[in-house]
Image (cartoon, rainbow, N blue to C red):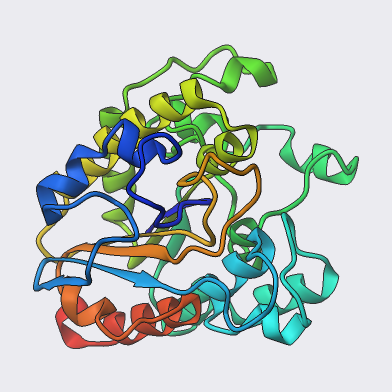
Length: 300
């Protein structure tokens, strides 16, 4: 699964929507439409895309902590918590994630799982100093005792940094990792996934660009995502399914700096795409759909 933070299905207006202004050719090639709220559900055996609800019946703008928790657990975490919770999970929400997340569910079924993200060597030190906080996806990985991928992994092509290309690493004092193309990052991700039943990669530059309304950054993001997704899909093994989704809208509407109420895309490419996502209507449906699909003989 490629999780892309903060991408909703917005208006087909290039003045406010980077996906329309700059285009995402891989989506148009696969589905014959733009990534916008005007798209109809497209369900074919190996390439499907549906709109899913991120509000979960709770008033207010959807937020990252509860949205990602809902994706990972299959629980309506916003309703459980009584509100949408932004950014990083607090203690109560963290407990729900640690106990019910998809990585734990699959591992209990003896299916190997992993996060492909690279973390800086001083990540846990920064957390201890309260300069970093665990995201929902990081909590899921930690809940199963996973050793987070770090510098040695990315140097060996066995991790993907959150910006995909490694270009941001020098900002954090990491100078001995070469920048790579989005194509190479996708090759690395697919190679990592070959050893696991479920692999997740988290990308959040979209949400940051949306909050800053940074058009220059947005153009680069769309370029990177287009090459990354196209390559990953092209290299998928015949028995592998690629899912792409998000937790809430933001990047698709540069007329505001906040999140949006827009639905988010759920894209499935590859093996059993239609069968896996055709019944999903909101964020809580993603984990149950994956667990059910992986429990079938065809995926084993």
